[in-house]
Image 1 (tube, chains in turn green, purple):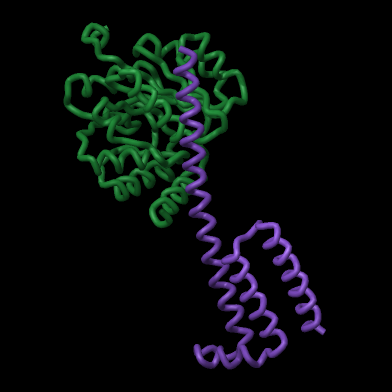
Image 2 (cartoon, chains in turn red, brown):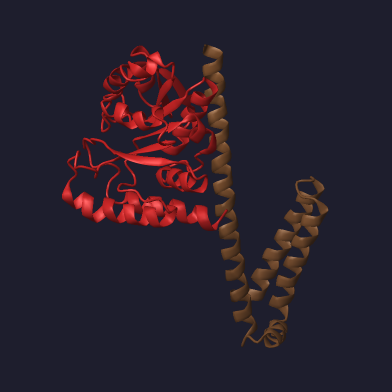
Length: 227
Length: 109
């Protein structure tokens, strides 16, 4: 692999909560693409951790559930402490595809960007249910762009890659689901170079459900006005 | 009748306050604030027209209304204080959970 020859260390950060059915496949597929797979088990309720470990991942345990944003930040800090040059944020439920990792990291390796976001809507690579697309994702994207000042075609799919430089600047403090918006805001705030690449998202369930968008809004609202 | 109930209640609260102060569960500042508060409540229930005087001064019709406005204000204020505090505690718990996770993996290696 190109990145291994260049001695660039790539870590995949996989926050996982109750994902024992999918985690083995996710870890194995990522192992072929990156140097370390770091699974952050966000509250030990099932065998996710053991399965990830037996498939060759490094497993960190949150004693209690703190949310996806919190788990990503834990993984990021681990990666920084252990000499990662690039991290990839990757979901444990099987909706992200390991083949996309190369597309995602190549602008970072070439030095064209500090942060690369995966997008469901570039070149139509993913099949998104149309109700979800027009009722939730598009409005969310518009609002997200308005709040963060970035021009992205997709807001919350969670597949992204960051280089070491961006990783040092971006600290996720939104513990639950609004970390996507927070990361985009921080990219803008620190004037990081960013790029979007098309990725394929496979829907198993209906993501976070129809009401999750409102939850994210609530989190962002409280964070903006009450801190 | 309601006056008597309120006054009995206040006597009860003040006795509890004294015990708490003696056990050093609260400091003297907290004790004095609580004492003044409950004495005002006692005063307002014995001479209700006194609250009307204060209400007139601040431009509210009746003393009873003034009390309700003030308590609403106080409740809203404490509600938001509690939310802010919860958020803060939440972030602190995350920090602790994270530190434990990172320390444990370092030890295991």
